[in-house]
Image 1 (cartoon, rainbow, N blue to C red):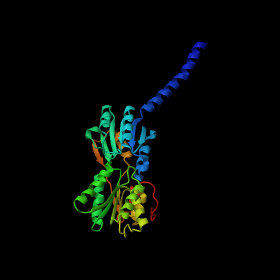
Image 2: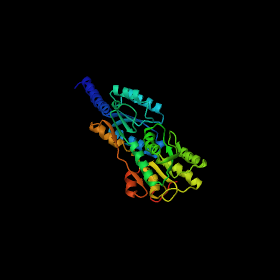
Image 3: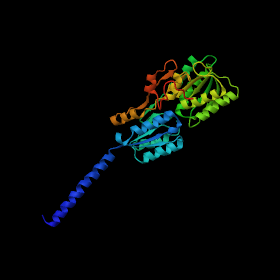
Image 4: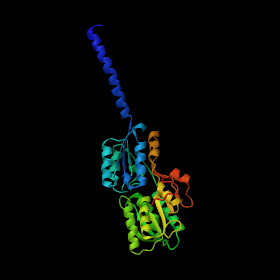
Length: 331
């Protein structure tokens, strides 16, 4: 072999494996499923924290995804993020909307671009043809379960303090509907109607109850649309020396199944908690990997637990976020 031929063979020996390696790397990257996730911020609630973490864990490179998640409680910022993902050519667009309205144009753009849209946690007010599927909590069902508990468990006359979440969100609309209907039917009276704001704030919820107390309102149940707001409401009762819980004057119901809230229910410090399951990510991933996406809305099964029905096993199975431990009250 002359020197020229040897040099050519040596160069090929170096270049060809490198080219094959690069090619394999590009193929591996392109085989990842591109997902854009539009979600609310984890600071919103313990529920949202668990939800955001589940999305990040499931839609990871290790699981075959090239995914990005945008977290904001501003509907216009969410829509802008969704449009960005569509331009980036994602395969799937997952949305938990801050507000149920205003999404039509964005969803139609995704459809035109061939992007499959899956709603999670919350529905959107749009024609069902504008999205592929939705895996959500039935917020109206949650509201009905909670309201039925109020009607069956609180002494008459029922005088209720309503603390809503973000006004106009699917969660607030659904969880408010049944209790508002009960008032229209004369089954209870809403003596104070406030909100924890866009961030479902503990502090804002506490102010709602403080204002009701300062105004001399008489009430015997607090219906708070998430656990953090229930916590803030109870802080106001404690500061005013008003008894609550199993043997108290004011009954307390929260939503979301944070483990601290469930321990409060178990201890009789609160009375009931309505589940809202944040673990949609694993089920949505199964849909995507199987290539068999359902059509339309799919509802999750959810529970309501009371001081009389709660157990350690149920807290372990269905609770979210850190467990302070049995007998530990979170004030």
